[in-house]
Image 1 (cartoon, rainbow over the protein chains, first blue to last red):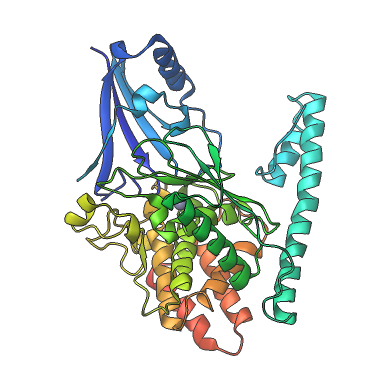
Image 2: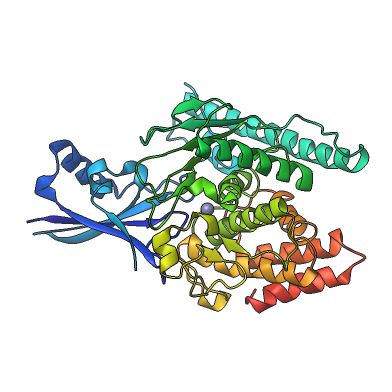
Amino acid sequence: MDLLVVERIGGLAGFGGPGAHVRSRGQVAIARLSEADRRAVEELFRTRGDSRPSAVRDGFSYRISRTTSAGSETIEVPESMVPASLVGCVKDELI
Amino acid sequence: MSCQCFIIPTNVLERFAKDKTLSQEQRKCFADAAQFEKHWRQVRTAHGKLSAAAGAILPSGIQVAAPPAVTVADCNHGTTLPGTPVPASTADATAKRTFVETRAVADFYQNVFGRNSVDNAGKTLMSSIHFSVKYNNAFWNGTQMTYGDGDGNIFIDFTKANDVIGHELTHGVTQFSAQLAYANEAGGLNESISDVFGSMFRQWRANQNVTQADWLIGKEIMGPGAVAKGYTCLRDMANPAAKHCLAPQPTNYSQYKNGMDPHYSSGIPNFAFYKAAKAIGGKSWEKAGKIWYAALTDFAPRPNMKMKAFANRTRTLAKTMFPGDPSVFAAVNSAWIAVGR
Ligand SMILES: [Zn+2]
């Protein structure tokens, strides 16, 4: 089953940074996403989240990886562009 | 066509104004915005100078402009900004705290640095609270502050740490002054400026000198789960690599690499500010803070500034602002050398 591996990074606390003791990860099967969310994810990978500078500071970003028969690829996109079903699949934890 | 271009640097606006791939109407819009931005910048600079001059000449307590309006909105655990306006008479503890501490940040910038709000032109300070569900973050979105309630384990209500409120508002100050980018060295400086002024604000509120201050960032938002594991802060400006930090940081430029999260690389300039302020002594905002503020706001925007350039600004300012006290320059110079800049 094709999976999206999702990591929430950054924010005021620097989630997922080098040496950070807080991280947020999760995964979701592409087949379990709604048609609209599947299209949104497809668009994110196509545009690679668009890289225009943003005025947001301390916002979370999401590192999203997918592995399909065509191979693996990873993008990093700001939280505002990520479908709620992906935002909801990660869990914040202390490490 | 409407055009909202005010956070775009003038040189970029001017480039778009000449971009033949855009329509004539779009090019005119960018040209008008560039022209307006130049005038607006002059007005902001003049206003800042007037405020500072008035502060020096007029009897204490008299201000040139009224303090900025402070508004709070409630997201009710949704993610649509800004949310429902909250009256100042609210019983909500988070809202009350946000009103009080945001006004205090405005007072801090006005009384210590002669700055009228984040844009030095009285911009209304808008905050949204109760953002999303168990949201472990606070952020500035280019227009306003937003605070989550925390998940109750790793973090609690993000408004509980007044340095966090100072940190977020300072992102606004940086946006309207040096316009530092958010990646590489400028990103680390951007984050450090917010930690420096957030921490300084917390010390100012508690009337602490540099020895009394604990220099911790986010101490009051650490949740019981984090505290139980020994994490007492997000970051520690006095000891950025300490084990009690939830996110330890580098302490020397030799550890820096492009692409680092700005919340990580900010440890280097954070440590420099701490060392300078500590060596100077007294209250951090009296000398070191004034030098850092001038380095941030007294120059044309420089989005891609490197740490060395910022360090050298503070070296020059330490001499010109405190010509009769060479120990100030010595403290600033030694602090930057200690972190490798
Ligand atoms: Zn920040």
